[in-house]
Length: 194
Image (cartoon, rainbow, N blue to C red; front, side):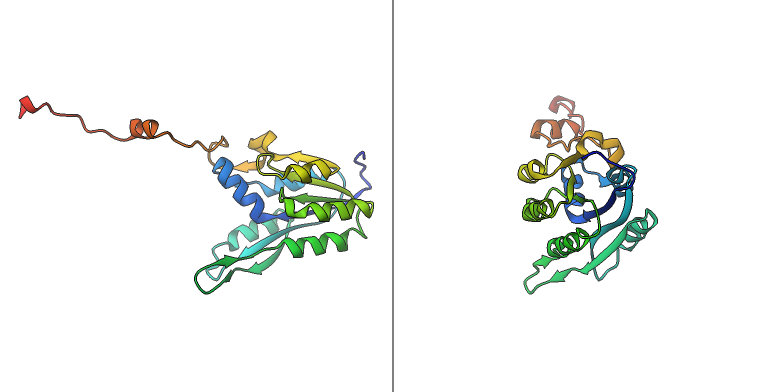
């Protein structure tokens, strides 16, 4: 499908998936505004929604405000903390329901997530005649969802555009000898000097 300015599009962002992918792969944050701009690609944006998790401390509030200033709505869910310390805040079902509802009103849906759990959703949307695009980091995107989608936007292909902060490089796992070389080493004093 060729992009046309008259195409109606919805962009649905699995914020947790992108956040952890960027942090674990590149030790950086995500530029959600640039992702939405490139996903829309001159088409008619109907909705851009980031599915987010809020905590009791409210430390994420500036992030939510930044999303709003970028023209991205937020749907918030409280972080659940269970007895024993386990935490859960999963938006998969909420995002999927919204995608199904929007499928009646748009020509294309961009799922900003590489989560393979969305494979049945992508298949369903395509069956309904919706053009489905996936935007994700290739290293953490499910190969199945990439294969089934009509289009894949590889966010890893332009790190300077889609990442904020740090060096935008691969997160380097230090070998013990490299780590030791960076440590400050006090000069050794020969025993004969004592």
